[in-house]
Image 1 (tube, helix red, strand yellow):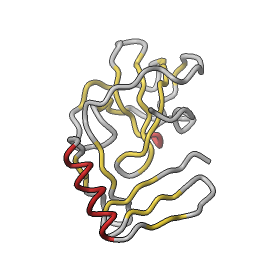
Image 2: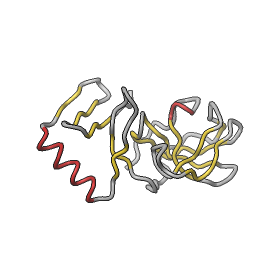
Image 3: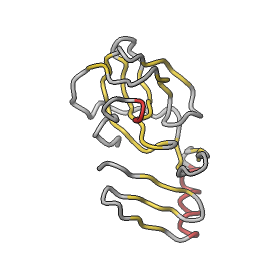
Image 4: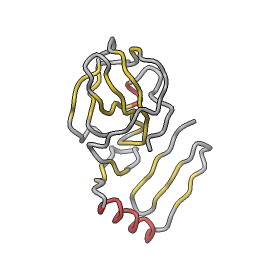
Length: 141
């Protein structure tokens, strides 16, 4: 499993692939929040039942995923500048468009994959739940 979510609330909770959760105290959480804000990371509010995490629009990553190019979108999807619906839209991914996965990371309401639409050349973020195979297996670094 490749699930890793970070909550920035009264405490920081990290859910690792094993399902084990670790929680930091409020002082550590505040310090982490201040570091994120100083580096330009903006917290994005999640909807009820979702985990709040910090995301930044505009991050780009090198291609770490060697899987082949093929159509992977389940539905017509927006390609965004960051892993959040709050980030600007760069383009659209059609179900017939071949894509080149680069990597994934946690974002608003789940994991997002950074990819390139091979047909248009647009790179950006698509929520993994909009992709047939749930996105890249390579973590963005």
